[in-house]
Every structure is written in C-alpha cells, then in structure tokens.
Image (cartoon, rainbow, N blue to C red):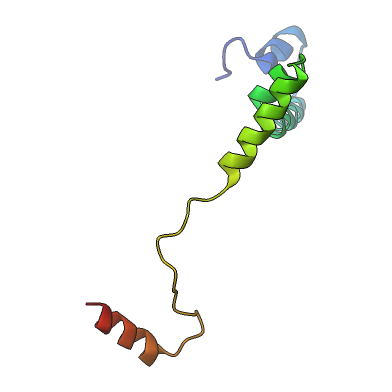
Length: 99
C-alpha cells in the first residue's frame, strides 16, 4: 500500500488515475523527485543550514580552526613498514623475527 500522509498518496487521492500505466508513470516521477531531494540533503548537511543564518565572523574563524584540527589523522604507532612490493621471503622473515 501507499504510505499514509505521503505526497504521492495525496497526488493519487486528488487526481483520478484511469490506467495502471499512468499510475506507474506518476510513481516513477515521484521516486525521481524523492531521490533528488535526498541527494540535495546529502550535499547540504544539517549543520550548514544554521551557519547560513549568520554566526559572528570570529565564531566562523574558530569553527574553521576546529575543522582543520579534526581533519588530521592520529599519529602512527609504527615507523617502519614493509614495502608492498617486497618479496615474500623477506616478509616471512620479518614476521618470524617479530615473534
């Protein structure tokens, strides 16, 4: 069945749809509309809407600094890695010596 209260259910209730093909055509258009709306929501995060209202300039700078700090990866525990193109014998030797 149709979801109650959905925009598509309202359209079907308002317009008289005579054929199943017409119904499917309307359904495809509504699906495309929903997908376009979801894509727009993904591109525009929820927090961004609040920023457009107008935070102070100084607060905006602080937010940028915070974003820069958060984007850095944590420091690595290891300093020496086996190259990906190393021969198997060398890799196995390193593994056995690590035990």
